[in-house]
Image 1 (tube, helix red, strand yellow):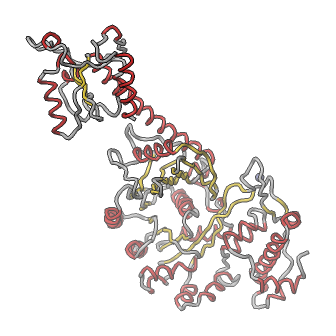
Image 2 (cartoon, helix red, strand yellow):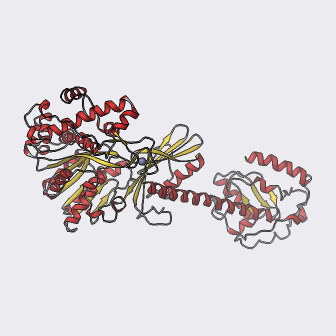
Length: 617
Ligand SMILES: [Zn+2]
């Protein structure tokens, strides 16, 4: 660019300046903004350059020279080169090497010392261009204008961040994804589990957004972003300072993860952490897990677990399936029931907060990994000294955290935590894999509760399609699905009936009522997104006992499951059965439930049921 300007400048100079004539003082432009400068020192006595050597210096043309201005002015007040204020009347050095010197002061020792200092510090200093003081003023004006326009860019990026968050909260998004590559930036929101394209910006706008989020996240002020490596950070609503972005109401924090893409692209995922009041309304403190999608029987198990002293309660499930939300509701309720008299401690990495009356200790996401590990160990040690009644430990992820959790549980504290297994019954095995001894893992006083959950998309009540119509409309696939659904529900009903215990299945299946079953309408309506609106928790939860744990310890998983689900055993309900209930009562579309939970019934089971009940009517 500067090369282009230079050529342009010379051409103009040739046209207007007529080959380096006398400077045109008449055409001085009015200076609007006054730059704070010291008084111009008088030209050196006895050495007035204009008088002694009028032809030796070539004066630059005032109208064309500003075209050469580019880059930063190193000698500006906040420039990188520190010079005395009065020197700013005499000269200006640009980062491009352009070196402007007031013709009448070219021998001033001030000017010479500035040039020397610049060279010493490794800056490029081209041959001086002799100019009138007016041009020097113009150079510093240019610098100020440039600064305010980059300020403007930053302000607009900041406004864009705030607007994007506002939009995300309005739509109930959990994540904001921004992919900035190949000339454009695609903005997507994750709402009810699926990604929706929200906006497309230019890549420049996207890069600015990513950089601004980085600059405003906690612990990053002054740090330079390294876009070649993945980076993590947080934005929080309680951070203070002028660089802080105010998060919209309802958001506690935003976890940010940047990832480099090929082709010099960048990716940013922002996870929004909502506060409980936003999610469950103002009287959320009295809400319980039934409002999330737990059944009344499961609610009773949760209540019983909440009342039992000591021991671990482990809530598992795949990532991003609402485990921590469930835990928060359980603990909020516990705090309300005990009128906040309990000492509840939250140990999370990173902290997410949201439990009324609880004390939060946590490690910031911006801290480096090794340091984080160390801090976490220290936090665990100090937690024991704080004498808590209830502890929520963000996650049991390794032997260290698991041992810590058990140590707390052994001393009579209620410990709540999350894990990553895919069924409640698999929890003890996972603890064994981590390295915990069997005499601890299979002690039902220590592992009191095991839960697992997934989120299912709720069907839109306004545009859902009755099962019969769907079978006609959607063809054989829907019909096959309906056959599995019918068999699945028939078998579940038979098994969950106490009167049927010990009888063969063929003697006890009865035709299930499918009149409340609906399919989601993929076309959707103004109240939903492709026929779905919101999500509901599909969970299984077990309050352990000696028999169940001993069956698991003997590796008799099937017997353990039968005992758990039997109406004469623990009378529990597993995730698939819970999903079937949600489908039966028109809360969830059967295809969504099968997508998350697997087939409702195997071919053999469908045949078995149809032998008794006949084909699907
Ligand atoms: Zn709808």
